[in-house]
Structure formats: C-alpha cells, structure tokens
Image (cartoon, rainbow, N blue to C red; front, side, top):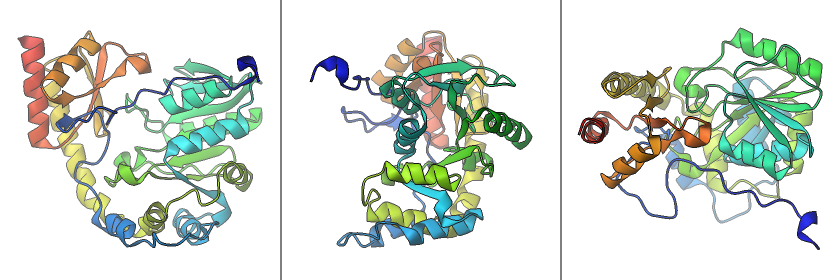
Length: 335
C-alpha cells in the first residue's frame, strides 16, 4: 500500500508533566491537586480485583456515575483518560474535510485527533451566532486551559442551542471544573468530558468519562476495544460519587495557594488567573525562561503550543514549593 493511502503521521502533542527524561524536582507544569491523592479513591484502586476480567459492559460503574449525575447508565461513556474520548469523538463525528471549531486554543490532543482525521481546526475568540455547515464539533474548555476562563451556564446553554440548530456537538472539557464547582450541562447537543484524576490527585490512574446523549455514547462505546478500562480505574470511577469530601477539604487550600502565588508573580509581569490551580505569567521569551528554570530544577509549561509564546503556565504546588518558583524567577528576570 502506498503512503498516500495511509492515515497521516501527526506528531504527538506537547504536554506538561513527565517525559522520557526522568524529572524528580519541582514540577509546576502539571495541573493537579497537590494535596492528593484522595485516600478513598486510592484504596479503591488498590483493592480492585486485578486477577479477573471485569464486566465488559462496566454496568455497575456506569450506574454509579449515572445515579450521581441524574441520567441513565446509557448516557455514560467510560475511558482511560479524556484524550481517548477526544480521539473517539473525532473518529465518530468529525469526517475528513470537516471542521472543528474551538473557543480559544484547543487541548492539544483534540487538535491532534482532528489532524489524524484530516479535518480542519479553526480557533475563535467568539463563537458566531450561526455555525457554518461544515462545523461538526465545537470545543470549549470549561474552564479553558491555560487561561482559566470559563463561561456562565446561560452562555453555554445558548451555545448548545446554536449547536443543536446546526447539527453540531458541543464538546465541554470539564477537566478542571471541580476546582471552580462548574456543573455538567445537560443538553441534547452537549458532550461533557470529565477527568476527575486532576482534582483528586490521581492522574496516574487516568480516570475519565463522558456524560452525553445515548446515541453519542453508543458511538463512543463502539470505538472502544473490549475491557478498555482496567479494574483499578473502574473501581475508582465507581467510588467517585462517595469520595467528594476530599474536595471539600482540599480545594479551598488549592485556591488560596493559587491566589497567593498570583500575587507574588505579578512582580514579574502580567498574570491571568481565574480561580483555577493554574495561571499564566507573561515573561517575554517563555522558552528562555522555561529553560532557565529547568536548569534550576523547576519545570513550568511553555505556552507556545497554545499560541502564547510569551507566557508560561504554572500550577500551585503548595506554599513551600511556590516560594521556590518565585525565587527562581527573581534570579532569572531580575538577575
């Protein structure tokens, strides 16, 4: 088969966090609850039955989440990581030549998934009142990464109505919604993607799921292999509704730490922060600053891939670690 008939090769998207090179110092590039992991969910992962195949339908897991969200089990799709759900969404609903419209820069995995489909990605700062006919997916980070901006429920509902008229799916990325107590949007045109590992400090377990209409879930499930969820991740998701006290205890601390860090970083340039654990700092040459910090054992997220080459994104790691970041920036920016 000639290469022209094969799917395109698309480079992997840049992310914060670990790479193939081990890093064990201070990592501000990961947006995760630094007071985790949630002990109740960690116990669920450890106590799961890893010796046998799970129920291939994961009915108990779906029902637990469905009862929590007030929907049916058929409106819950399970996944290892939201990235997998994004790839499945594009394969199911974004044809070659179709368009993905993103309110601000999309999560890199979604852009990559669209590229693999040979689809178009258009980034906008405002969604038009009427969508062009080739727009099959509208992506909104709620809140957006890296800016932290979010939309009011009334505005989201209006966007969903626009999507319903155009036959478009509204993809709401709620990865960081727990940090701001943002709700799921129950609307026929909405696909809610949830990544609870971030707020619960368990990103390594890769828990994720979608809340959407039954016909959307059926297509997402159709693209998943059998037993696509490991036993530990399934157990975590099933226990999730009973494990919310951890967020009540820790998220106010995360928010307070982020506010303190925001105040301290204004010494170095404009800061954008909207209540999330992460924020952006304008530093001029973000690549240079990120490299200089890395030499000091401090890792931050260069925002060039988001179209913000002058900004770094940092996520609070607690007061002591945050103070180290501030000292490192003083050395680099003030000499």
